[in-house]
Length: 260
Image 1 (cartoon, rainbow, N blue to C red):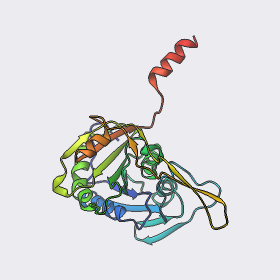
Image 2: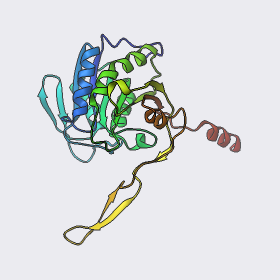
Image 3: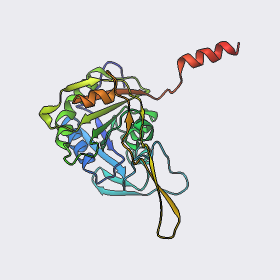
């Protein structure tokens, strides 16, 4: 994607996710894409693949199931789905941009390292296709405001596509789980800190074998001004650019100096 913007109106959009082809969030994102783009394709995992990260299936063959025109399910991970979409399903007419989500649950702080939603966008970016990941920060709420993502999604896309972003960057969008008119705005943020999936419960299965449930305690996320968690807690939509280059500049500089 050019840094000076992107013409979404004429784009061919690929929609994927990690919650599965039948998840409510992907239906929301498909409608958002249809409202702003020329052509929309959906290729997503057959079943839920939350927290699989950027995993690729290599030990077994994958199957593609055509559901309807331009809608396909893959019996693999989000990474598999995007790879097969770009290299196989849409090979003759590749997507111009990929939307991943809308995820049921936020992808804030270190969530991005576990997230299949982020991974789908990451795979697209590695394949040379710009990508945006969308999540709704539900935090176990009884009422889920999907309508907020659907209402604000086109506005978020308008801002992003007017500005553009570099080729090695993915865009991570998190909507607060609030009624449409309670959202306080859209904010550019940095990735916050804090460990997700805290705690575990040890138990035994009916055969007496040890089993463990991970992530049984609330997220221990840091809340700082200008970061994703703080923005969502204030009712804002968080937009965080994430770089695929994980190199730490200062450490690299120090190592180079020590090795002279």
